[in-house]
Image (spheres, rainbow, N blue to C red):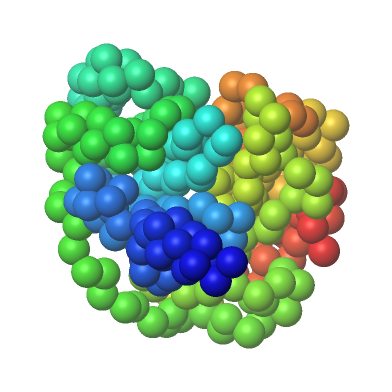
Length: 293
């Protein structure tokens, strides 16, 4: 009996242990290498990589938009029982849309939306939402190669930027939620209370199903705000009324995905005013949605 046990340990259990590799091995390392960019694991086992357009200088009126306010493209990966799902939001100039679409379609990566997020920006910027299914490494390589037809700059280490010009604590109190500072912009992410599903797979908030609220200081306690509310059909007009009542303009209303359940609509907005006042208005709009507490 002892001989049999020693045989099993030697020829089966030990090789299996070695085959698993180091316990702390990064399962997403190859995906980052294929993209040429390092991402981070988000809640929901999502690997997310930023694709900011730091090369673009876009203004709305006299406000030059920081990448973290409205130029922060991204792509996210999540493993599924049948490979991986990839979703993303790419920030593009008008001239980049058509050639990138051709490249992505040839690689089997689909477009789920192409549209504006803000109004009166200069130069014109468009946003392409994408989705792909397959092996994560293959999807990352295909996206990397397709992005070569754009002027997306190489990945560089981001420089920390403090929040200057608005009181973060007062804004958080008015909004009733905690935010985080990223690239000189105060950002809030507000997940929905219900699960968002697509073809039997849950789409976590970190893959674009959470309401995003961004504040960029513009001086004298003011901030430019933009982002997008994630809404069901019944919530669309109550949120429009809450925003416009508080001096916040609605700049776009559209879909980002194609097969999600429940059906969602994404509402973008813009204002440049007292930051605390705007936070109060955004809170009124959030309270008209089924937001997670």
